[in-house]
Length: 257
Image (cartoon, rainbow, N blue to C red; front, side):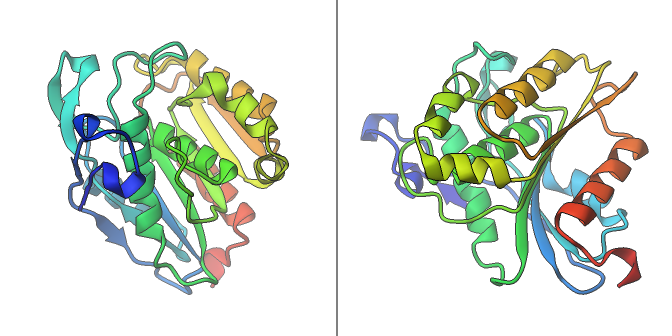
């Protein structure tokens, strides 16, 4: 599936980019379907890598949708092309944000979730750059619109971010505090952030700062977990935390269903 600027309403013809998303992998629920979560991989990866991990989790009531990001030139790699949800030149709060890429990725996620039944709870999670895209989707949901001003069409019930960072963090608090409805949504939306102290790709300080920024912007239903010695990967202790948190926040029947 491709998204040009027309899908999210961005910019002029000269600025238009088309994003060709790769293959989407789906893990069907093994019991009663209660929730659907789009899970987003990290930079240079693909959806199949995480679909295999998620299929093994003891969460039989969740349907997992694992898309693959577009292949595009990435400034962080000197313009070398790889799968990426958006362009990034530096992982820090001061780096410029690729709003067009972020909007296209968030729109792709929303589109994947838009056909789920009304009684199914929906969420977004991810690892590294995928976690950043999940957090961007959370801010779009709370604000009710994408960065370009177009309406955000779905209501999210849970956000999970592993080893990631928060895009557009410098302006978030002012944007949320400018709307009573956004403040209400921010206070309600459950978010789980996990980060390893030994992460040498997305430094722990970026995860910690992201959690602080979200909390100060009014995201009060936020849990931040730290793992000693964990690098830029996941471990059973972390995935156990994700399972327990999702089961509780989404009121899932769990393995007893």
